[in-house]
Every structure is written in structure tokens, then in C-alpha cells.
Amino acid sequence: MALVEMVMPKMGESIMEGTVLKWLKNVGDTIEQDESVLEVATDKVDTEVPAIQGGVLKEILVKEGDVVAVGAPIAIISTNGEDTAAAPAAAQAPAAAPQVDAQPAVAASAPATASLAKLDQPASSRFYSPLVLNIAREEGISMQELEFVPGTGSEGRVSKKDILAYVESRKNAPQQAAAPQAQPQVQAPAAVPQPALAPVAQPQAAPVAAKPAASYSGNVEIIEMDRMRKMIADRMVDSKRISPHVTSFVEADVTNIVNWRNKWKNDYKRREGENLTFTPIFIDAIAKAIKDFPMINVSVDGGNIIRHKDINIGMAVALPSGNLIVPNIKNADQLNLNGLTKKVNDLANRGRINKLTPDDLAGGTYTVSNVGSFGNVMGTPIIMQPQVAIMAVGAIKKKPAVIETPEGDLIGIRHFMFLSHSYDHRVVDGSLGGMFVRRVADYLENFDVNQSI
Image (cartoon, rainbow, N blue to C red; front, top):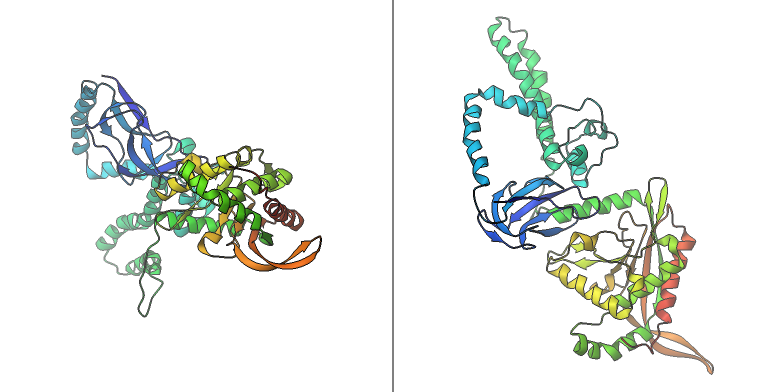
């Protein structure tokens, strides 16, 4: 008899809405607590939403493709499977239907017009999601105009549905204004007012004609970006616009690390059933260097520098689609090498099967990208906003090198790799950025080969 309202959960920092991708359960299905009910997409990740309580799914309140604000109701669950509580709601629906049908068509459009009206005062301090800002930019809506758009989201925020409705109203507004003027034109005998309609129609056609601006010749294939690729593109462009990127390079001798891993990787595989890779070793060195240079572990908020005490190191993971996503290891400095290996393998494995959660992606303070896994010797990575630095580790290559010994210098074969450190020159000077990457290389070169795992 008890009905429980299921709402759109909060799925990470700064995420105010989600798009319903797919309902995994139908009305009438029995669901258990914590069983996945639907798939939701946000600006950061696609994830499954579990049921907050077991019972029967009585009603689905939002359709696939709908954009829903955090905290808004999405479904109703009956905790004991009875229909008695749902009956009054069902009885009210037919009573309301004749009222809607009895109204003229003009009356039905009046509320829609009212809901599209502009705000009386600009909402200057309101938060806008990247998706809303992208739509506004594509439609030529300035930030001043956007501040007057009514929002139905939490705290009056503009959702995707709000901005799309406003865009549609902008396109239809001139047509609706021209309709009543067309009536007097027909009744008037004079033909002079007729040319006045021509200038009104021309601005309407201009934006429509401007859409297909690009033309292609030759043998080409046009591939539309998927949703995640569009988000990645927007974030990369924003990062280059926000942060003046500077990159420093250091070459590190990692022979000791290569030999140590070769010694332990087979035993670790048999004991733990997991691979022992170089990535946790790199993350361990970066975490130690961050403790030495804490001003690398910061973010920028307007005119303020936010120094983070937690060291949460993100690692780029390739998804099945080929896109990259960056989950992070929380408090990486508090984990030993075995703990880091477990975390790295867990995030990489869940990333490959699209099982990462919003919490896995939130809260990162520094990022490392292993471009060496693609055979690249070095790279110039783009900073993950609002972080201020990112490191790329290149492929490990054998090279002839001068080896200093008490008896004299020798030529030998050593394993080398490049470290590329990109940093935000607004708050990280060249001395700090250069010393940090050098310190990471020092930790790698002085790796303790006598330690076990």
C-alpha cells in the first residue's frame, strides 16, 4: 500500500541534471533494493541508477531521452505490490481529461507561451551546465540574454529542456507576431502595406539558410560525433582557452624499475591473479613529489588558489568506444605499491566495461596519462580543469648511456623514458613546474629494488 517516490540522485560534483538513456525495468516489474532500474547519462559519465527500495515499479514519470534535474521524481515504487494507493491517482486522470478537451486550442497554447516568458530580473549568479552553454552558443544566445531565460531546475537553474524550449520560442516568435498582421493586409484594398511583409520574412529565412554552410567534395564519409566525444571536444577547447599551457620535459633512467618488475610480475600474477604494470609505480612517485611541492596540487577559482590537502591522482582510461575517461585514486599518497596496483587495475577494468561511477570521476587533483601504452615516446597533454597540471609518461626505450663507476665511466644499455609535464602558467611558474617533474624522475631513478610486493 505504501508508495515510495524515486528521485534523480546526485551523481557527482557540479552535476545538476541527467539524461535518461534507457529504462531497464518496465511498469509492473518486481525490483529489489539496489537493483539497477535505469541508465542515466551526465556530463561526466554514463551510469546505472539503483532502486532505493524493493517493491513493484508502479509508474515511470520520465521518458527515455528526457533531461531531469537532480532531486526531481522519476518513478514510483510500491513497496508491497498493491494497487490500492495508485487507484485514486488513476481515478483523477479521467476527470481532468474532459476539462482539457473542452478548452479551445488557443487556450491550450496560453500556458506554453507564459512559461516561455523572460524573467523580470536577470539571474546573474545562476549556475549553467556545459550542455546549456553549448546550446546557447550554437544558437547565438548571449550570456546577457541567457540570464533572462526561465529555469525549472534546482534553484532556478536552466535545464536542457528549458533552453531548447526557449530556442524554439525565439524561432516561432516572429511568425506568431506576423500572423495577426496578415489578416488586415487581406482586408485592406491598398497594396502598399504588402511590401512591408518582405523585410519581416527575410530575417526568418537567413538563419535557416546559414545552417548548411559546409560543403564537401570528393570521396568522404561524414561521421557525427557521439555525445561523449562532443563533451571531450568542448572541455579540451575550454582548457586551452582557460589555462596558458607550458610543458617541461625530463628523461628518466628507469632501468631499476624495469628489472624489479620483471622479477616480480609472474609471482604477482600467480598470487593475486592481476597484472603488475608500471602505472602504479608512476603514480607512487607522483604522489611523493606532490607532498614535496604541494602548490602543484591546487585549482583556481576566480582570483583564489585552492590548495587541496587530499592527493587524488587521476589516470586516463580508454573506453570501449575509444574515448578516454579519467577516474582517480583517492588519497593515493596513503596507499602502498600493492594498494595502488589494486586500485589501478580495478579502475581500468571497470572503465573498459562502462562500470565506473560518478564518484570515481569526481575530486581529482592531479592527472597522469600513459601515452607510452600507445608506443609514444612523449606527449603534451591538456590539463583537466580545474586542475593546474598533468603529466604524460612515454614509452620505455633501451638506449646506450654513460655509466659512472668508481673505476671509471662505461658505456652500457639502459632503459629510459620521457616525462612531459604540462602546467597552468597562471599559477605554476616554470621553476615549480620544472622542479616538480625533475623530482618525479628522481623518485623513479632511485626506486628501491630491494622492496617486495
